[in-house]
Length: 324
Length: 128
Image 1 (cartoon, chains in turn red, green):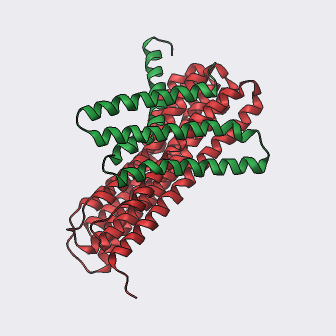
Image 2 (cartoon, chains in turn orange, red):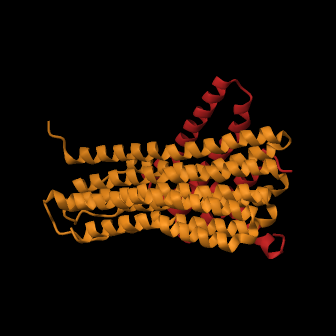
Image 3 (tube, rainbow over the protein chains, first blue to last red):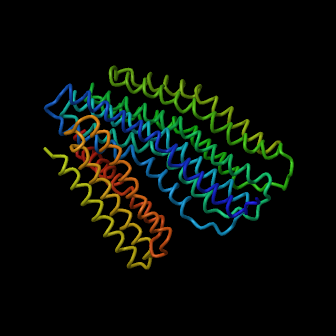
């Protein structure tokens, strides 16, 4: 029985919606769970301020949930939109949008949970620091959400830009690759940024006098941790906006899909690695602020080396896009 | 010291007031769908936050099985609720999707803005 292309487009939209919300729920659930687990420990340590800890947990969980809300938005749009142009390109674009948002929300969801959990623990240790801990938690969580925002932007572009004039092959593969590049690369960046933010909350509670220095090194560390997701965004843009000559060769399509996969997977490790470096630097600045400049330098050198693998992945992706 | 209820009320009223002021401004400058979408999205964001805050202590006062049930039901219900304005925006032309999207994260924006502003003020007055 032949199925019309309109039906296949609907199928792609439904699968994309499922992937967006299903994958997107993973990160937020883990992050919120982590925050609640740490809140339990904090209440047990200092039951007298359980109200404050509950409040912080609520605010932290509300922020950690943002990535899941983005996934819900993309999922609902995929489910309920009417698609005027029905083609295989639309199918690839819709599937790519779902994958992009689903994968992209995982890291941010988990990452936002770290500062929320550590802030709860920190309030139990230093109740008078609750205001500043909440601010650090929120700034750290907001930066952790950035990769999910990148993924949402790419997902929107895939859903709403008109690719109907482009040749079927290899554009379909390029659009699927575009979704995978940002989505996968965002996992590491979101998680890594969260590690740095968590350490800043822990450090601020341990050494309240060093909170300014801790915030600065956290933000620098998080900024570098975001780089792999920016590489992913860059490759997605190139894949979406490059003009391709029509080609029936399977190799051409696979090269573009692989370009997306390469930067996507290649960004996960460096994002997490950069976050671990930042986490350690933030922790030790809190304990020994006099060594701040040395710790900052060593963090940046370590992150640059960790970053190199993401750069190699991006170079290979660019070679796959422009040379193959 | 602020209670959980006070925190909830503070952010909800701030988000709703801001959405109504900005929404009315957008309606006046002839961006009606955007303004209406923003107010609609914020309304559901406020509902979500209220339910989240209400469910927290409720979940604590029961057995393990009931707590698990309440937690799962709360998540399912809250996300289903947030899908409503998005479906409305997709089906009814009077509500702009982008406005609804911004409105849905209005509480989170308000929480962040409140603390960044406090940090800025305390930095200016030399309290940090």
